Length: 352
Image 1 (tube, rainbow, N blue to C red):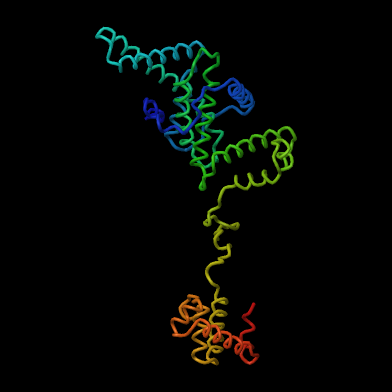
Image 2 (cartoon, rainbow, N blue to C red):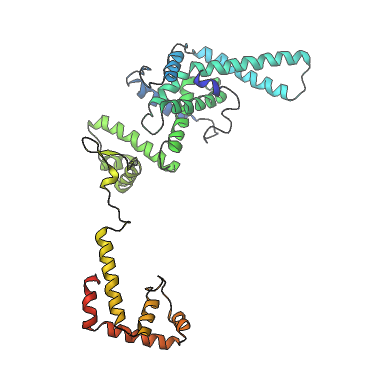
């Protein structure tokens, strides 16, 4: 089964394609796309062999590799057939055409569907070429290709041959946007806002370009100057661009340990802290037993030593049937007695 067969239906991209600008591409955007394509042509030619071991992916790549490319005249003829097919479908939906006209309109709809299918199949190699550039960003090649196919369908539906651009130039922008949006939404364990992803993509492009121009990896200072942003912002973007590590990541030459074994647990008490806390509790109880039962009860209630809750003077007074002022006096007297060296000596090791 062809991977793209499921995306050839008219309804597959409506509502499923990520949010992209609904405005027509302006001339500057298309010029940027053409420039990017010129740069890409200098890279190593795309090979479809051994990209993924999956038999379905390999079969698909071999299949699309044998589909002939379209000439400029082919693109124009297919675009016009697709345009006529859309118009015919709208005419049929109106319910106005007679039997003779309906047959002709149905023929044009069928021709339009064939044109759409041929457009998509002939440009599937373009999708693979673009999708491969985004490997290693959290999504497998099959997912990147599927998202790219959705962008390709969007380009087919909106292509206007009268604008004078080749379809590959126009489609590259839509395919790339679809793939980038998928990487931003699905490629990370922790999703980043779209504007942060855009800044990271720009940072990566500039970093690659400067590395070629300078013959070395650009510093944060180089990037900040080129992008007209502060070094602090460059540092922050690079930090956000990092991938989270799994606690189960193997560590060591023989990979017998995991990363989790080397991270300190600052939540679970250690045996020494538990022993120290138990000893402190015993010392506090010893000190309270040297007070009168009323004084000890007041301090336990005021400092949460009875049930873990700190009570106000009024609340303690209500429990003991005394006034707020009397509770304050008892508390002050009890604290003075505890400060006596004979009682405070055993508590000093725990004061820090």
